[in-house]
Image (cartoon, rainbow, N blue to C red; front, side, top):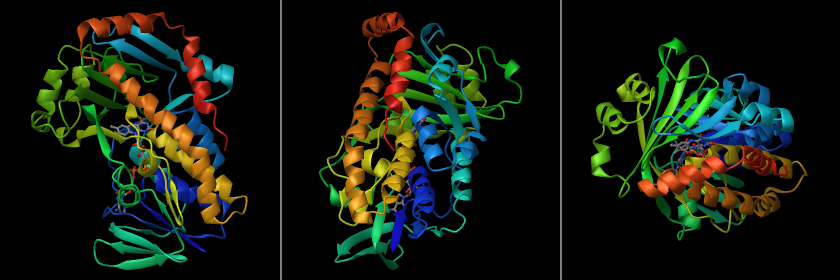
Length: 388
Ligand SMILES: Cc1cc2nc3c(=O)[nH]c(=O)nc-3n(C[C@H](O)[C@H](O)[C@H](O)COP(=O)(O)OP(=O)(O)OC[C@H]3O[C@@H](n4cnc5c(N)ncnc54)[C@H](O)[C@@H]3O)c2cc1C
């Protein structure tokens, strides 16, 4: 029996690892559209549920060995004044978890790939079309090649061609803000004020926000979001490092310095997108997984966490010796509600964080300052409430 995974992103690779662990009898192969698995991307913040899922698939220690466990997460205003704080150390003690850590995407991808040396990963193989006939899924690639398989796990990301064909009514939504990301390499933290290598933060201005997420080895992942009238806005498309630094000129230190210290060609720009929760992930012999099934805005830092959860849960279901088709159905039943909750909550959180009206922003900050810190622990508990 053969399962073909489309996409060697976090979801596809984690799924291959889970299937190797729980169903070594199943033949696996991965097709990836990119010509190489480039060390691209910036950082990721991951939560306690990702740690639990990584543990399930047997790679928690490997991933943590290239990660930075964060002591606290702060929301600040543009001047650097505290709005809210999550004391990760206290939560970790109380719940016996690691509630928040960061990792460079390239490091995570390297660790994931190293776990599956025997799974063929075919690069430069972009799926163009597919169809199910009887017991077979036929796949056609953009280069004209074809292949056949028994089952497909489509982990081909937010613009999944599988979802496009299976759920044509599901369309991409622009969240109303656009985002730049980078990694500044600092040899000495002391050179920058207001920077602690164990504290992540988001600074909320008016219609714009800046995130600082320390990684390992003195690297700082940062992201900068600005409200935009539409996706692919021409004004923001023309933004270089200088314009970005100017746009965040009113923000506290070291926001400007971090932008300036990042090689301009390494600054990534993406509009923030998702799609409304769908009602179906399993389609006979094809399963949608990761962003292909439930892409979410990054406001909760949960997209990759959910993809890793997907992998662990699918692996555990298949471990019960179910056939893949029944397992795909069971996966759908387990995952629809939880992933829809994350997509909706993350969308709302983004709206809150990107408020552009000064009166509303002031009111928001005032109200958030009243929220007791123990509420943050409740949120970690809610995220951990997943049955593998
Ligand atoms: C700005 C930003 C910040 C984020 N921050 C966080 C965070 O802090 N924490 C977090 O948990 N999540 C975060 N996310 C979300 C996270 O990046 C995604 O949820 C995660 O990468 C999803 O993994 P995936 O494998 O499903 O999809 P992807 O990572 O998109 O991988 C899909 C793969 O499929 C390949 N592919 C696509 N089409 C085809 C095709 N037709 N044929 C073959 N291969 C194909 C692609 O090349 C790619 O390698 C962020 C996202 C963004 C945009």
